[in-house]
Image (cartoon, rainbow, N blue to C red; front, side):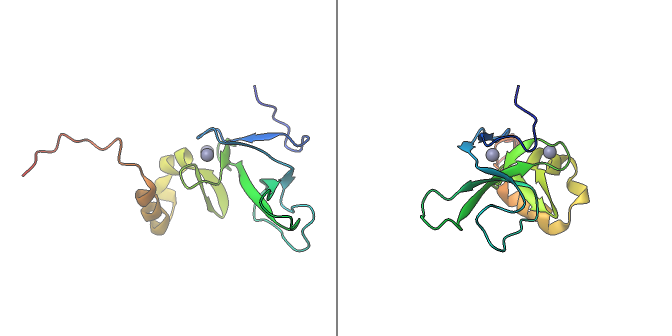
Length: 121
Ligand SMILES: [Zn+2]
Ligand SMILES: [Zn+2]
């Protein structure tokens, strides 16, 4: 079982939807070594490994505000609409989201579950 500590020691972030894993160095809304960055949500953050500039950081993901599942910020796993929502929760509550979010989601959808027994002309 995963450790549920919100502010535990740095460890490894794991997306519960796509199983992306990456070591994080900080959880919270204000990444260390940044002067004026305040994030909109509590996030799992790692220092950007591709630059020596210590102001640079990457947001790995955060918790879904509905089911508190840990999800990455990838477009197939979550979206941010004033709070973080994992896509399964968005799908369940799609009517509560504005039209532009619904349309955005339609675009993201992988056409895998589409019924293909439609008669062809
Ligand atoms: Zn993911
Ligand atoms: Zn969720």
